[in-house]
Structure formats: C-alpha cells, structure tokens
Image (cartoon, rainbow, N blue to C red; front, side, top):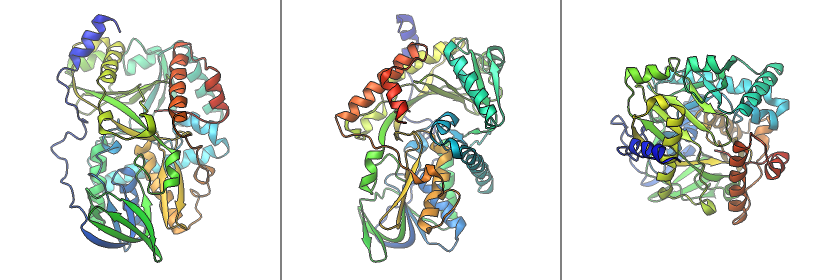
Length: 472
C-alpha cells in the first residue's frame, strides 16, 4: 500500500465504532428471559438467527396448534444474522455458476424453488409488517479486470442458452458506470430481481416478533448444551434447565453442532465489513447509484458493497480468515489490518469519495462447507433435523432450509427432500494441521489467480476436479 493511500485509509477509520452498524440501533428489542426449570413442547428449535427463526415461524404457519419453543445462546440475530451485508438472494446454490457445476440436472428446479422462496420472504415481510427496508433492487456482478469481462460475458451467454438468465442483463463499462460510477468498473451482469437489499438485524428482530405473536416461546441467553434421547422424544440440557421435545431442529450453523458427526462438514470463516458515514447529496451524486443495487466484484477474493436508505455505503469481504483449529473466539471479530486494507480498496474503487469516514467496522464468523451451499440431514432416528453450510448466502436460503428441516422431521417426501442437493452431503474438512495447510494453500492460490489473469494453478485445478473449495 502506498504511504499516501495508507494515510487516507487510516484517517477514514479514526472515528469508527467497532460494532455492527445494524446492531447499533436504539430500536433493538429487549431480550426474552432465559429458561429456568423444565419445558415441554412438540418442536424445539435451537438457534435464534435466521435459520431458527424461520423454522419456528414456518412450523406455526403449517400447524398453529403445534407447541414450539426456541432457545438462543445469546440474543436473537446477534451473530451472522445481524452482521451480514443484507443481500437476500434467491439463489440456493451460492450462485448460478456453483449450481451449474454441482447440480446441472436439477438446476432449473433449484432456480425455481429459490425464486419462489424469495417471493415468500417478501410476502412474509409484508404480512407481518417487518420494517427491514426490503428493496428488490437486484445485484450487479462487476468485472474489474479484463479477464473477468470475458469470463462474465461467457457465463451470461451460457445462462441465456440454458434459459436460466432470468431478468439479468449485460452492462458494458459505460452502462455500468451510468448505474454506479467507479473508474475500476469494466462491465457486469445485473440480476434485476433475484436479490433484495434489506436491513439484516431488523429482519431478525421482525421474525422474532412474528414468532412471539404466533405463540412461539422464546428463551434467550439459553444455550443448548447437549442432546439426548428421552422416551419417544429428545431432551436438551441448558444452563438452568431442560427442554423435552418430540422433535428438534438445529439452526446453529457455525456454532458446534449438537450432532457431533456434522461438525467436520463446516469450518468458520471470519468476514469483515465497513460502513461509511452518511454521504452528502453531492457525494452521492458523484457516484450515482440511483437504483440502489447491491454489487460484488468478480475476483476470487471479492468485495461486496451496497448503499443503505440513509445514504451510507457498506463495504465488505476480501479477506476470509480461518482460525487454526476452527475455534470460534470473539477476539477474531475485529481485525484492524483487514479494516485498513478494506478502506484502501474502497478509495481505489471510489476515489471521488476521498475524505469520507467510516462510522462502523465489524466482523464475525460464517459457516462454510466444501461445496459452498447448505446441506441438510437428520439424526436420532429422524427426531432431529439440521441445516448448515450456507457460506454467506444464508439471508434468503435459510428460509428454504427451514422448510427442508420441517419436511424431514415430518417424514414427508416433497420436491425439496427429493433434491440431490438435499440428499447429498459435502466432503468433510480434514483434521488439523491438514485443514489449516489446505485452506492456506487454497487462499494463496486464489490470490495468485487474481493477480495472474484468472489462471488457476494445479492445486486449484485439482480442487475443481473433485468439487472442493474454500470461499467466503
């Protein structure tokens, strides 16, 4: 980093609060009391992020008489659900390209299910009056290097050939810069209705309120400590009590699964983001962005960025930090060297915004798996269901995962449970030190490919051949 660029980046961070902008909200709801003593229910949901909240809500919608309890180890929405970029995508496969590579024979069905799922989220937001700034403005996949232009054009042509392009359109450099003006933009694909922008914390809090209104009993600051059979059902021990349930749905994602055999299928990746102060009208005019799309660049080490209703820019991504041993630690939630790097990249993208400061900086863990998209399963003779591995695209896909878990717990054969994506599992990550070595080598190789015009080395080609990877 050049000294002038470093000084500009450092100055921009001088007043930033080390907390998620979304969670730093005076309207944050009070926590529900912790569980004390014993509870009994038909369905216990463990986890108060999107995965658990959607599961509890859909369970009550399917059967209003069902007795549902949800426990959350901290407060609803405090982890990845309150720290992400607010991109709510229709894709269930971590993007069309990943779906093409992994499930080509059922991709049309997966795309249809994903579109219906996004529609259902939009309908639920309206039906329950969830004030989360839901805005179906789409997303632009941006090329910032010449080889990315060629790759994106080829990909868009293939999607059109397969009838899977939807309402996406190719934008050349001039058309793209008319939407959002950056000297680094060379072209892009605008998916016009397959992604919505929203306030992620307000979505989680709105789902929590909707669950309570439907009669779900929610206990916060109540961690599930262990899971065991109990008669015809299951028992979960908590710090101050127990829950006895006929069925259990695990929406714990990156946190260690109570089904231990699931744990090797995911690893934690720490992702980081910055939020600018509110832009002036003149600053906003200098970059355009009237249609308020989300954006992401096409590098292996990519950035995602979007504009908020109050004219702030969220800028995140690039570094994906895997802690040795996959151990979660709040110390990893902040990484000044990454904040500095992201700030420098921000001003490279938008030099016309020099002088803007960042109001918030934060990080947090997401769960990734070797196929980049969610996996599902059951345990304890079908009395427990789980979904995990969303790899950063869980804002929308967790609702689909909730439906899958409820189908599995009911023993129902549905169009969801018949999917190969649902019936198969990702390759587990190896034990240490092999996981650390492999992930480090993969990250180095991906960065090298970005520098070398997209050319992938033997290591990446080998991973591609076996359908393996590591992504943020």
